[in-house]
Image (cartoon, rainbow, N blue to C red; front, side):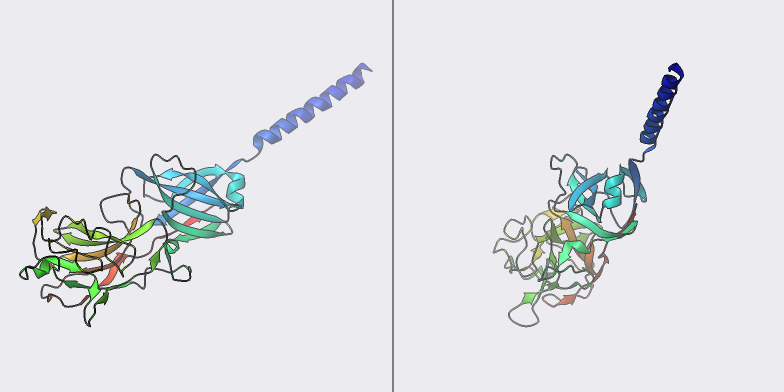
Length: 297
Protein backbone atom coordinates (compact mmCIF):
# COMPACT_ATOMS: atom_id res chain seq x y z
CA UNK A 1 0.00 0.00 0.00
CA UNK A 2 2.87 2.35 0.83
CA UNK A 3 4.55 1.70 -2.55
CA UNK A 4 1.31 2.40 -4.39
CA UNK A 5 0.92 5.67 -2.53
CA UNK A 6 4.49 6.69 -3.29
CA UNK A 7 4.01 5.95 -7.00
CA UNK A 8 0.84 8.05 -7.02
CA UNK A 9 2.72 10.95 -5.44
CA UNK A 10 5.52 10.63 -8.02
CA UNK A 11 3.03 10.76 -10.90
CA UNK A 12 1.28 13.79 -9.37
CA UNK A 13 4.51 15.67 -8.82
CA UNK A 14 5.70 14.87 -12.35
CA UNK A 15 2.45 16.19 -13.86
CA UNK A 16 2.73 19.34 -11.74
CA UNK A 17 6.27 20.11 -12.84
CA UNK A 18 5.47 19.40 -16.52
CA UNK A 19 2.49 21.76 -16.38
CA UNK A 20 4.59 24.46 -14.75
CA UNK A 21 7.30 23.95 -17.36
CA UNK A 22 4.76 24.32 -20.20
CA UNK A 23 3.40 27.54 -18.65
CA UNK A 24 6.88 28.97 -18.21
CA UNK A 25 7.79 28.22 -21.85
CA UNK A 26 4.58 29.68 -23.31
CA UNK A 27 5.33 32.55 -25.73
CA UNK A 28 3.48 35.70 -24.66
CA UNK A 29 5.20 38.41 -26.72
CA UNK A 30 6.45 38.91 -30.25
CA UNK A 31 8.46 41.44 -32.23
CA UNK A 32 7.02 44.16 -34.46
CA UNK A 33 9.57 45.76 -36.78
CA UNK A 34 8.87 49.18 -38.26
CA UNK A 35 10.86 50.44 -41.26
CA UNK A 36 9.68 53.86 -42.50
CA UNK A 37 10.94 56.35 -45.08
CA UNK A 38 10.69 60.14 -45.04
CA UNK A 39 9.78 60.85 -41.41
CA UNK A 40 11.40 63.84 -39.75
CA UNK A 41 11.93 64.56 -36.07
CA UNK A 42 8.98 66.26 -34.36
CA UNK A 43 8.91 69.26 -32.04
CA UNK A 44 9.95 68.66 -28.44
CA UNK A 45 6.36 68.32 -27.18
CA UNK A 46 5.31 65.57 -29.59
CA UNK A 47 6.09 61.91 -30.29
CA UNK A 48 5.18 59.29 -32.88
CA UNK A 49 3.04 56.39 -31.64
CA UNK A 50 2.32 53.11 -33.38
CA UNK A 51 -1.01 51.28 -33.14
CA UNK A 52 -2.23 47.79 -33.99
CA UNK A 53 -5.89 47.59 -34.94
CA UNK A 54 -7.20 44.48 -33.16
CA UNK A 55 -10.88 43.55 -33.52
CA UNK A 56 -11.50 47.13 -34.67
CA UNK A 57 -9.84 48.74 -31.64
CA UNK A 58 -6.41 50.45 -31.43
CA UNK A 59 -3.69 48.92 -29.23
CA UNK A 60 -0.54 51.00 -28.73
CA UNK A 61 2.81 49.50 -29.72
CA UNK A 62 4.70 52.34 -28.02
CA UNK A 63 6.02 55.82 -28.77
CA UNK A 64 9.26 56.96 -30.36
CA UNK A 65 11.08 60.14 -31.36
CA UNK A 66 14.04 58.78 -33.32
CA UNK A 67 13.55 58.62 -37.07
CA UNK A 68 16.37 56.13 -37.63
CA UNK A 69 14.91 52.86 -38.91
CA UNK A 70 14.29 49.95 -38.69
CA UNK A 71 13.00 49.87 -35.11
CA UNK A 72 11.67 46.80 -33.28
CA UNK A 73 9.07 46.71 -30.51
CA UNK A 74 7.97 43.89 -28.19
CA UNK A 75 4.19 43.53 -28.08
CA UNK A 76 1.58 41.07 -26.86
CA UNK A 77 1.64 38.01 -29.10
CA UNK A 78 -2.14 37.69 -29.32
CA UNK A 79 -2.54 41.30 -30.45
CA UNK A 80 0.34 40.88 -32.87
CA UNK A 81 -1.13 37.79 -34.49
CA UNK A 82 -4.70 39.06 -34.77
CA UNK A 83 -4.02 42.65 -35.83
CA UNK A 84 -5.49 43.61 -39.21
CA UNK A 85 -3.91 47.04 -39.61
CA UNK A 86 -1.02 49.26 -38.47
CA UNK A 87 -1.43 52.99 -37.90
CA UNK A 88 1.14 55.66 -36.98
CA UNK A 89 -0.03 58.86 -35.31
CA UNK A 90 1.50 62.05 -33.91
CA UNK A 91 0.73 62.47 -30.21
CA UNK A 92 1.46 64.98 -27.43
CA UNK A 93 4.49 63.88 -25.43
CA UNK A 94 2.34 64.12 -22.30
CA UNK A 95 -0.92 62.47 -23.31
CA UNK A 96 -3.82 61.44 -21.10
CA UNK A 97 -5.93 60.19 -24.02
CA UNK A 98 -5.54 56.42 -24.51
CA UNK A 99 -6.82 56.63 -28.10
CA UNK A 100 -4.95 57.76 -31.24
CA UNK A 101 -5.03 61.47 -32.08
CA UNK A 102 -6.60 62.68 -35.32
CA UNK A 103 -3.11 63.19 -36.76
CA UNK A 104 -2.73 59.70 -38.21
CA UNK A 105 0.14 59.98 -40.66
CA UNK A 106 0.67 56.41 -41.90
CA UNK A 107 -1.60 53.39 -42.21
CA UNK A 108 -1.75 50.03 -43.96
CA UNK A 109 -3.45 46.63 -43.77
CA UNK A 110 -1.57 43.45 -42.88
CA UNK A 111 -1.20 40.86 -45.60
CA UNK A 112 0.26 37.82 -43.93
CA UNK A 113 3.10 38.97 -41.70
CA UNK A 114 3.69 42.38 -43.24
CA UNK A 115 1.87 45.64 -43.93
CA UNK A 116 2.81 48.23 -46.53
CA UNK A 117 2.01 51.61 -44.99
CA UNK A 118 1.78 55.06 -46.57
CA UNK A 119 0.42 58.55 -45.93
CA UNK A 120 -2.42 58.39 -48.48
CA UNK A 121 -4.88 58.06 -45.60
CA UNK A 122 -4.62 61.80 -44.85
CA UNK A 123 -6.29 62.90 -48.11
CA UNK A 124 -9.75 62.08 -49.46
CA UNK A 125 -11.93 63.09 -52.41
CA UNK A 126 -15.48 64.44 -52.31
CA UNK A 127 -16.88 60.93 -51.94
CA UNK A 128 -14.56 60.10 -49.06
CA UNK A 129 -12.32 57.82 -51.12
CA UNK A 130 -8.61 57.90 -50.33
CA UNK A 131 -6.56 60.02 -52.74
CA UNK A 132 -2.90 61.04 -53.02
CA UNK A 133 -1.01 64.33 -53.06
CA UNK A 134 0.89 63.37 -56.21
CA UNK A 135 -1.64 65.03 -58.53
CA UNK A 136 -1.53 68.39 -56.71
CA UNK A 137 -0.94 71.51 -58.79
CA UNK A 138 -0.43 75.16 -57.97
CA UNK A 139 -0.33 78.69 -59.36
CA UNK A 140 0.52 82.00 -57.72
CA UNK A 141 1.05 85.66 -58.45
CA UNK A 142 3.30 88.33 -56.98
CA UNK A 143 1.19 91.21 -55.65
CA UNK A 144 0.61 93.25 -52.48
CA UNK A 145 -3.14 93.93 -52.39
CA UNK A 146 -3.21 94.87 -48.68
CA UNK A 147 -1.72 98.32 -49.23
CA UNK A 148 -2.12 101.16 -51.72
CA UNK A 149 1.56 101.38 -52.64
CA UNK A 150 2.20 99.91 -56.10
CA UNK A 151 6.00 100.09 -55.87
CA UNK A 152 6.45 96.92 -53.77
CA UNK A 153 4.28 94.38 -55.63
CA UNK A 154 7.03 91.73 -55.59
CA UNK A 155 6.80 91.54 -51.78
CA UNK A 156 3.61 89.48 -51.68
CA UNK A 157 2.53 86.04 -52.91
CA UNK A 158 -1.07 84.92 -53.49
CA UNK A 159 -2.23 81.48 -54.55
CA UNK A 160 -4.76 82.47 -57.18
CA UNK A 161 -5.20 82.55 -60.95
CA UNK A 162 -6.15 85.98 -62.28
CA UNK A 163 -5.80 85.09 -65.95
CA UNK A 164 -9.51 85.82 -66.33
CA UNK A 165 -11.89 87.90 -64.23
CA UNK A 166 -12.92 87.09 -61.61
CA UNK A 167 -9.85 85.38 -60.21
CA UNK A 168 -10.11 81.73 -59.19
CA UNK A 169 -8.26 79.48 -56.77
CA UNK A 170 -4.66 78.82 -57.72
CA UNK A 171 -4.22 75.52 -55.90
CA UNK A 172 -5.50 72.08 -56.82
CA UNK A 173 -5.21 70.12 -53.59
CA UNK A 174 -7.21 67.17 -52.23
CA UNK A 175 -9.27 67.56 -49.08
CA UNK A 176 -7.37 66.66 -45.91
CA UNK A 177 -8.77 64.45 -43.17
CA UNK A 178 -9.26 65.76 -39.63
CA UNK A 179 -6.00 66.62 -37.90
CA UNK A 180 -4.27 68.15 -40.93
CA UNK A 181 -3.96 71.54 -42.66
CA UNK A 182 -2.09 73.01 -45.59
CA UNK A 183 0.45 75.78 -45.06
CA UNK A 184 2.16 78.11 -47.51
CA UNK A 185 5.79 79.18 -47.09
CA UNK A 186 8.28 81.62 -48.57
CA UNK A 187 11.89 80.56 -48.05
CA UNK A 188 13.97 83.68 -47.41
CA UNK A 189 17.72 83.21 -47.14
CA UNK A 190 17.21 79.54 -46.39
CA UNK A 191 14.62 80.19 -43.65
CA UNK A 192 10.94 79.37 -44.25
CA UNK A 193 8.41 82.07 -43.33
CA UNK A 194 4.74 81.08 -43.25
CA UNK A 195 2.10 82.62 -45.48
CA UNK A 196 -0.62 81.04 -43.29
CA UNK A 197 -2.50 77.78 -42.84
CA UNK A 198 -5.69 76.74 -44.61
CA UNK A 199 -7.93 73.77 -45.27
CA UNK A 200 -9.47 75.01 -48.53
CA UNK A 201 -7.81 76.77 -51.46
CA UNK A 202 -11.17 78.40 -52.19
CA UNK A 203 -10.96 80.75 -49.20
CA UNK A 204 -8.60 82.99 -47.25
CA UNK A 205 -6.07 81.39 -44.95
CA UNK A 206 -6.45 81.30 -41.19
CA UNK A 207 -4.37 84.41 -40.46
CA UNK A 208 -5.90 86.66 -43.14
CA UNK A 209 -7.11 89.17 -40.55
CA UNK A 210 -4.26 88.83 -38.04
CA UNK A 211 -1.10 88.61 -40.15
CA UNK A 212 1.70 90.72 -38.65
CA UNK A 213 3.15 91.36 -42.10
CA UNK A 214 0.18 92.59 -44.19
CA UNK A 215 -0.59 96.18 -45.07
CA UNK A 216 -3.27 98.36 -43.53
CA UNK A 217 -5.85 98.69 -46.33
CA UNK A 218 -7.45 95.24 -46.01
CA UNK A 219 -6.99 91.51 -45.68
CA UNK A 220 -6.36 90.79 -49.34
CA UNK A 221 -8.30 88.53 -51.72
CA UNK A 222 -10.23 85.54 -50.43
CA UNK A 223 -7.48 83.04 -51.21
CA UNK A 224 -4.38 81.84 -49.34
CA UNK A 225 -1.44 84.20 -49.53
CA UNK A 226 0.57 86.87 -47.74
CA UNK A 227 1.89 90.39 -48.13
CA UNK A 228 5.30 90.93 -46.52
CA UNK A 229 5.03 94.67 -45.95
CA UNK A 230 5.49 95.27 -42.21
CA UNK A 231 8.18 94.13 -39.77
CA UNK A 232 10.78 91.52 -40.60
CA UNK A 233 11.45 87.77 -40.58
CA UNK A 234 14.42 85.50 -41.27
CA UNK A 235 16.69 88.55 -41.02
CA UNK A 236 14.87 90.28 -43.87
CA UNK A 237 13.17 93.66 -43.43
CA UNK A 238 9.86 94.12 -45.24
CA UNK A 239 8.90 95.07 -47.88
CA UNK A 240 11.32 92.95 -49.89
CA UNK A 241 11.59 91.29 -53.31
CA UNK A 242 10.51 87.65 -53.47
CA UNK A 243 12.20 86.98 -56.80
CA UNK A 244 14.67 84.16 -56.21
CA UNK A 245 12.81 82.96 -53.10
CA UNK A 246 11.23 79.49 -53.00
CA UNK A 247 7.47 79.13 -52.57
CA UNK A 248 6.31 75.92 -50.84
CA UNK A 249 3.02 74.26 -49.92
CA UNK A 250 3.27 71.77 -47.04
CA UNK A 251 0.88 69.50 -45.18
CA UNK A 252 0.94 70.18 -41.44
CA UNK A 253 -0.37 68.37 -38.35
CA UNK A 254 -3.08 70.27 -36.50
CA UNK A 255 -2.26 71.04 -33.75
CA UNK A 256 1.16 71.69 -35.25
CA UNK A 257 4.20 69.97 -33.77
CA UNK A 258 6.76 72.56 -34.87
CA UNK A 259 7.17 76.07 -36.22
CA UNK A 260 9.11 74.62 -39.18
CA UNK A 261 7.49 73.05 -42.26
CA UNK A 262 6.45 69.42 -41.87
CA UNK A 263 8.05 66.71 -43.99
CA UNK A 264 5.18 66.48 -46.53
CA UNK A 265 5.68 69.16 -49.20
CA UNK A 266 3.66 68.39 -52.36
CA UNK A 267 4.35 71.70 -54.17
CA UNK A 268 7.37 74.00 -54.50
CA UNK A 269 8.78 76.56 -56.92
CA UNK A 270 11.59 79.10 -57.05
CA UNK A 271 10.28 82.50 -58.12
CA UNK A 272 12.00 83.37 -61.42
CA UNK A 273 14.34 86.35 -61.41
CA UNK A 274 12.35 87.81 -64.29
CA UNK A 275 8.90 87.11 -62.80
CA UNK A 276 6.30 89.72 -63.69
CA UNK A 277 4.03 91.14 -61.03
CA UNK A 278 0.31 90.24 -61.17
CA UNK A 279 1.09 87.46 -63.68
CA UNK A 280 0.34 83.78 -63.04
CA UNK A 281 3.34 81.56 -62.27
CA UNK A 282 3.02 77.76 -62.25
CA UNK A 283 4.35 75.73 -59.35
CA UNK A 284 6.07 72.36 -59.68
CA UNK A 285 6.17 69.17 -57.64
CA UNK A 286 7.56 69.51 -54.16
CA UNK A 287 10.33 67.41 -52.61
CA UNK A 288 8.02 64.90 -50.89
CA UNK A 289 4.34 64.08 -51.46
CA UNK A 290 4.11 60.59 -49.92
CA UNK A 291 5.54 58.83 -46.88
CA UNK A 292 5.84 55.05 -46.95
CA UNK A 293 7.26 52.05 -45.20
CA UNK A 294 6.88 48.43 -44.14
CA UNK A 295 5.78 46.89 -40.85
CA UNK A 296 6.53 43.20 -40.20
CA UNK A 297 5.48 40.82 -37.41
